[in-house]
Image (cartoon, rainbow, N blue to C red):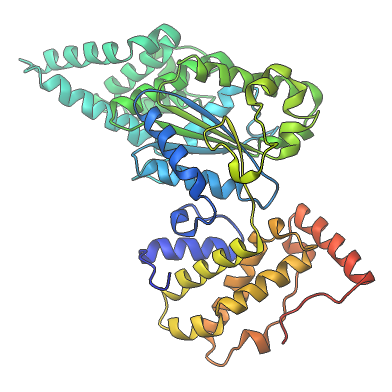
Length: 445
């Protein structure tokens, strides 16, 4: 992978994210290590959704196994098929799963398309209305009034199925079109916010559109149908919705947890019923969430729907199953990932030859081993810290200082302040073992 075909912008986004210790938003296909076994199944599921099916997929993995990486890899893959995507983090205060109106609101706020990286809802709605107007003009209207009437008829026809479940969505969308055409931008923007599930929208705008109140839990299900309809009629393949960090349900109050688990079961059943053609839901969680009594197992109907046999050799896992498990990083795959990151970095500098020489594969392996050693030899916990150290502490210095040799001038250190809770726990356990056995591994050799 010495020659990395990637744009300067994507390269900068990848390197900047890794330097901060976060997962890049784009370019994950280049960094994908160990995901080959999932490609065919995921592509097949996306193709089915693109043709009107719906899919619910659960991903399990320990911390560091790459759940966030996998979900963003999948959404990036989906965007190449012209899907819209939305990634939301479940939390008790910001996005409680049992309040689907808040989940829907976050979906709209985080809506992304292949051309608009975030906040794409207004762009999608305006694009849909433009296509609607073009189709109405194809009927050869005789006057502006005739065109307006034809557009209204076409709008009602395309939202007919949604109107049965969420008539307010169609009413607000019609009023938004009329207000935009009349130049009443303030009320039009207010209605668009209401369509996106935002609370405290102007009463005047709602009154003009003939809608009342705010979106509730049950109304959100109908609004999601409306969003899918708008996406489909705008020639998008569908919507990939990522529910990340669902395992946080385990730490919530028992009543909140049980309502959230029931909402999850309800969403799965709605997807299976065919109510949401064009929707792909991806949920991530830890094994403890799927198997423990404070998680999925607390609601037997949900546990039955997600039950998957993982008793066989991991090599024979079924990637088409409702629930799949990530293999996590091994020492070899961690080194492979580090080498890819080094090549991505080097391809964007004038010092590529020096970088590849000073940070060769052997050094990458040494650094990976050292980071894992500092974290109790848990390779699965190491990727985030390893890549951050590789980029910020090693590659940046080699690039900027010609006489910097990481083998001579760099010794790995990990401070508690730069680690997550899981990483700190792994570090503590590693320190306890080291104190009774051998010295910590470093790179000063």
